[in-house]
Length: 302
Image (cartoon, rainbow, N blue to C red):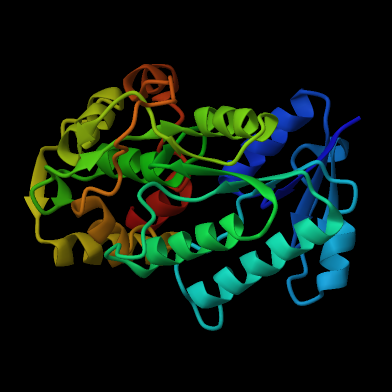
């Protein structure tokens, strides 16, 4: 039986990749910094320690692995957890994979990663891609746009806000493009990329391209909201996001994420490989989205 490994198999995208691999009868190893936490797939997944500081241990964890699906990354910098640290950790992972004889690495990057991108997140992602290309291991780089699906952060936050606030404010004019991709499409694209030979870089983008205002409008209609959509200054949008974030104890939106949206980075320039349409998915799931933070937020705002 083929053994594959997933870094971040309990993360959002990694969880769906691990589920697809297990569904195909593969042995799945979850490389995690928290191996004591049970995996949602139970006995279908085994855990191994993801220790970037110990190259020998990392190589042993990858021993016998055919394909490594790498979803490891950080959303933003905090304390010692910085983008340079994430780049160095990725370099250590790729070196360990080569040492262990891993056949192929499928790396989940981000759409439009580039060294001249306007945010450190996108520039660091480009550096990691360079590290993988120079690692000596066969690779596929998958570049998703904005991800949506069961339990995602973006749609849940949008739906909750649209249901409860009298007006929904969008940063700036909302004309900037967004091309959302379903997490199941990302998992399918990643598995196809892992099964082929030859180095490749592919975008993982959905079939629909919206302006951000149109995107919010699709969600608004799906959840039955009557809240008007109004452009607001970026500073005001970020302040509102911070207030909600204090309640849910999470970061809802960052300044860099707004910059990336407004710079048009959330759209692919290639033919979309994703097939799941946002409006169709929402039609069957509108009753469940927006419930992620509902109980805690409702208690706070009563």
